[in-house]
Every structure is written in structure tokens, then in C-alpha cells.
Length: 468
Ligand code: BG6
Image 1: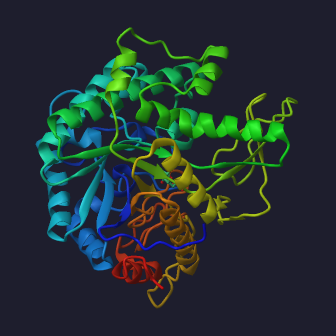
Image 2: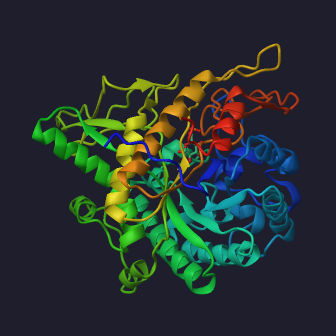
Image 3: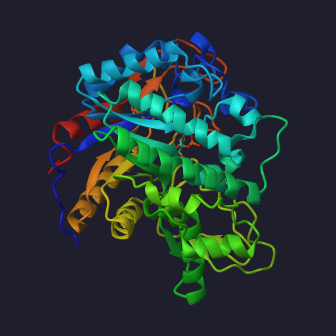
């Protein structure tokens, strides 16, 4: 179990972004607003309106990705750019933009990996009830069919919904538009059900009408450690791993709800209302592969039931609120943390890959993984992000071990190809291989600077990751 495999030929060395975090041009050329355009921002933090101005610099950005040697680029399409109100008239300029992007990638031999929806629901659909309204699912299926018909001949790999589990379990992590309250848990599980139905229909329609394409879900996936070998801690860790990860993936892959998760929802009055046809709809969709976003692991103890389980802990990203009677977050002395308090656990990636492989037996794509840090542009024009190189290198070493373990790994798309606006910390927290010269309110030159990690990744890709 310590054998190193070699990365296979055709391994998709890539990188990721999402539309609203990179594109800017939030209201250009007919784009409609999305929910993220309506978010209120912490004072002094960049909003998403200009972002990294990728919309106006597509050719330049893709040329840089090509110089880095990327084999794949995972990006999302902004639903409200191609259908401004989500379910009405199609915007030809929006479609044309993604043709330009995909064509530029293709010219450079970079495989596009397209996410249909990454947090940015069209605002007009939100006003009609958002995902609580079953009709949003119908609009999503129509939007997916439109994208497949436009781009099927040049984009072979598709992801449905980015981090559905984050949107449902931690809606505050994405943000709520000013003057709105977070939905209650019952509504969130109903929203989840509507997303699951739409996703299953999209899997089915993709296979039926566009058999050349491969498609999968993209869940934020991780492993939970029990704080101790106390059996109750093990149950609590299993509770949270199931509720946070497997309950979402099981519906996507097996087309039915996870038994533990269903019992949890049922006992708390959170189970979604199902129509008679729903069970069949869920069963009809099957993904071809599974995409996972992996950043860190969490450590879990049994609930104390003293009211203290739900307190947020400073600095923790993985939104470690416990739940009375279910689980309580705990510390792990064996792992490090990023400057933003995210647990750094490369071995946890290997463990997570093993679990996903064992549960589902499908190929896996790592659609996100990365380290957010306050990068510094030096006077000599360099960005020396050695900490990011160390982070990525350690994760890639564990991927090799996972391949030796028997995991079928398709590719690796770290977050992010280029600096993007983080969900909450603007440009203070950066992830890219390419630095974007801008501040929070000060757009500066928006110039692109290749970080040290850019050259390191280029070299690694040139060796197909087999660096020894
Ligand atoms: C992922 C999301 O969960 O984490 C991305 O899919 C996000 O959209 C990334 O940017 C990093 O999170 P953050 O909060 O540091 O931007």
C-alpha cells in the first residue's frame, strides 16, 4: 500500500475557475443578473462585477494556460449570460462568448470541462422562488439541452451542479442577497430534491440525445476522522460524513436517497415532498464519472448535547458548526492549516479517493483542490508562492498512491487557473497559478503575472506528473 503508480497517458492536468468569480462583465452584452450579483459584500472586499476581467481577456488567458501546458480547463457557464432571465429568450452574445472560449481552448489542445451551474442562479428565477420552485428544475434542464446542442461537438466533459452540498448545507458560505434571510432547513432539503431531479433528468437526456458526452456531479467531498476511538465519536464522524457527502452522491449515482440521511430528515420533519413520479426520475439518471472538490478533512466527536455543539469556531472554513445530538467539530493535532484556517491534509485526499472509488466504482475527476493565501507581488514583478507549490505537490503525491490503490483517476483541476474573487475574501485570498494585478476596490492594471507555481506546474505537466 505504499507503491507509487505512474500517472496514465491522457491524464487531464488542468485547472479550474467559475464564471462569476473570473469573468466580470456582469451586465455586458445582454447578460442578466444572477443571485451572486445581488449579494452584499463585506466592506473593502471586491465584488464580482469586474472580477478578473476574463470576459475581455479570454484569448490572453487561454494562451497563458496553454503556455503552462494545461491539458484541461474546467470553467462554468453563467446561466444568466446565455438565458438572461433563466427560462426565456436565449442571448446569442452569451452563447458566442463561450464559443470563443471553447474554440480558443480547442486551438491550444486544451480539453474543456464545462460546469453547467456554479452558484449563480439567474436572479429572475430566484424571484420566482428559486430552487424551491419545481419549475426552476425544468428551466435548468432546458438550459442544459441548449448548452449540449451548442457545444457538444467540441466539449466532451460536463459537470452538472458545483457543490450542491455546500449550497444546501451552508447557504451562508455562498452568501445571501442583501435584505433576504437564509432559507430554513426544510426548504433547503426541498430545494435539494428539486436539484436532484433536474440533475437526474440532465444525466438521462445527455446520454439519450448526446451519447458522445460524459457527465458527472461535482460535490465537495471529504473524509471525517473520529476524534478518538470512542465508539460514539466514530458514529458522530460517520453521521457527518454521510450527511455532508454520501447523502448527496448516493442520490446522484444510485438514484435513491441514502437510508441514514432519509431517517435523519424524516425524524426532524425535513424530508422533501416527493411526487409519485420522482422515484423513477431519480433512477433514470446515471453519471459517467464523479467529480470531487477536495480541500480538507474534518475531525468529529460525539455531540455533548449541552448546547455548545453549534458554536462556530474562528478561522474554520469548512463551516464547522456541529449539530446537537448528531456531531461536534473537534481539533486534529496531526494536520496543519492554511493562513485562512483551512485544514491541510494531503493524505486525506488519498483516503477520500479510496472511499469514493469503493462506494461508486466510477472514474474520478478532482475538479477542485488548492490553497488560498495572500500572495504578494514583489517589486521585481515575481510572485513566489512556494507554499502553494508545497501544498499541490503533497496532494499530487497522494494521488499517485491512490492510483496505485486502484482508483481510476481521470484528472486534476486545482483551484484556480488564475486568481479569482474568493467567495468572501475578495482578492486578499488568492488561489491562481496566474496573478491578477488588482486590489479590492482598486482595479489597477488587471495585468497577468505568472507565479512561481505556474512554472512549477508547467514542468510537472511536461513530465506527466511522474517527476521521479
Ligand atoms: C469551492 C468553490 O468550494 O471553494 C469555489 O467551488 C470557491 O467557488 C472555492 O472559490 C474556494 O473558496 P473561497 O471561499 O476561498 O473562495
